[in-house]
Length: 335
Ligand code: UT7
Image (cartoon, rainbow, N blue to C red):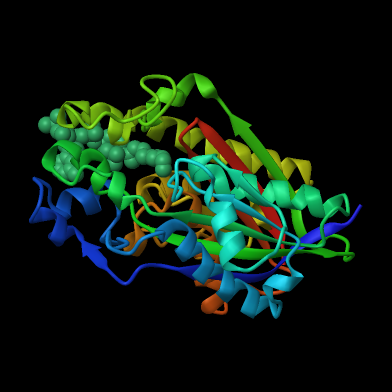
């Protein structure tokens, strides 16, 4: 069995910054409410006139990750692509990226695990590399979420939370023991599928959106969430998954050099931090400037830290995510 390690990290966020004050102009909300409840100050929105956004942003993040890993698309054996906001209903965005990168007939796997999508994808790529089937893979999280949000007062409970962006890592085979992805732990609980979802277009109902009467279909075509239920589960499941990962590797929270929680709400991150008894310098959050970018969140956090020179050889990173599905997951990485 081989190990896999991250050799390059990249990200891309759209240029358009939408502040809480911008939102105040189009819906009944306030900077104070948003910051107090979520920590978010601003987010990025992809402009609606720029077509093909999820795959295009992934392309830009991938180029950065490959450049930093000093490889080209010719060196990549396969793509694993996580998103809840694909460019098409089908096929997934993985093949669109595969085409943009001119990867011939190499495979692209699409993953639908929402906020846990990046760790799920990392886990899938890790298994392919461990078994020796592939040597080097691109793992992507990319989201264009603003187009699904209801940007009126009716949709304010969700609209203020999300942002757009993409992150990518190059994962490759290493024979170094004790380095790279130490473990991934994945969980789901489908009984809560309706607690955070967009129902249409889906085969459970009409299978297609009928434009007639679309205004009355607010509950179906925009994201819906039982915020407090999601909150309660997030603050228990993320520490639980992190403790499971640490125990599986005979480690404790004291061994963590950097903890990266999925960025759904700064209050959630702070509660998870308290549960794990981690000091502020060992936890990194950037929700203040990007909002919740779902599957893109963790690779954007990683890329931010990489750019700040805060990823050092030998450090132990713990990643945890929770979201729609419910799905949740953790990963331990030794650099
Ligand atoms: O990435 C997926 C995972 N997602 C999460 O983990 C999110 C988990 N949930 C949360 O973070 C929180 O539940 C929210 C931040 C989404 C909401 O906070 P909350 O404290 O649960 O607020 P609430 O939904 O109970 O709403 C409280 C009040 C309501 O007004 P009333 O009924 O008390 O008069 C809402 O209508 O705040 C109102 N409200 C708003 N006010 C201003 C809801 N959204 C807004 C808004 N601006 N954007």
